Length: 358
Image 1 (tube, rainbow, N blue to C red):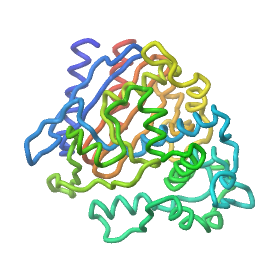
Image 2 (tube, helix red, strand yellow):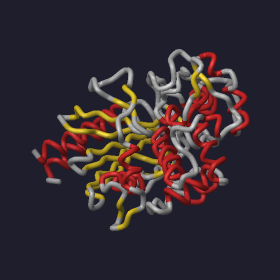
Image 3 (spheres, rainbow, N blue to C red):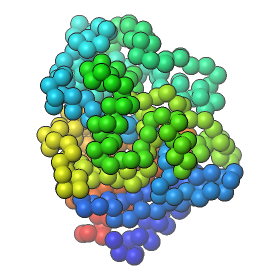
């Protein structure tokens, strides 16, 4: 990248950070060969005056969803399940909508037909203090009970329409556990994070606290200053990963290289291609053609190119990752508050990079 492009990127990020009062933002740009550039702005801990670093850990929210789908796809590669299997084949939950079985791929694409039930949203708002109560769901059995009658609330046939459903991803985590015989967290660690060299990506509180280099989670009251808050520990398959821009950059490079990282295949090419295949049209589209794959949004209209991306938010942390498969570029953005859509920032960074290469 030229100095002029770097200045443009830094200027844009600093302007947004200062305008929104977000305590810190960490960013990384990668290509197929490695990390091109990374920076951190602001403070990971305002009270102690600790600056953010590119190594600083943040919660990534729904960016976790592609890791969950990748876990399912790896189990399919082993012949232990098929994404076409009905959910009830692997879980003690008969999930039917409009008389049709909900299948694993319906959960992966948010197309079960079941409307959003707001379990995760209520939990997060309760933990950070925006609501006084929420439904306590601590394990898979609780989720089965919560969803026992969910099929009756379905509005469309499975596979017909996109309805963003966090609960569906909780069920995917339960399927991974049942089929693999391991906890979801252990499976992702052993089969995804370790092979990718994502050595500082965690789900468990004790691992994050032992690491030490993490951003304090903040909420920003309207018109007020950032206030330290709490993280909703306990979420996992639907949005519980905590990571840093370097590790997530490695994750994007694996996609840019169709499953190869550091000269070796860590994920089969057909799995990667299956993950980013556009499957279900998304409502509320920005580009007009967005579809959802397996844990990824996909558009073909980002400056005439394909963009694969996903954002994440748990209110006290926000994240955005996106990559251009044909151009071989990717961007990671992480912040320790909400208040500005990092998707805009990420797409602006990619736009500046495209402009440089044009």
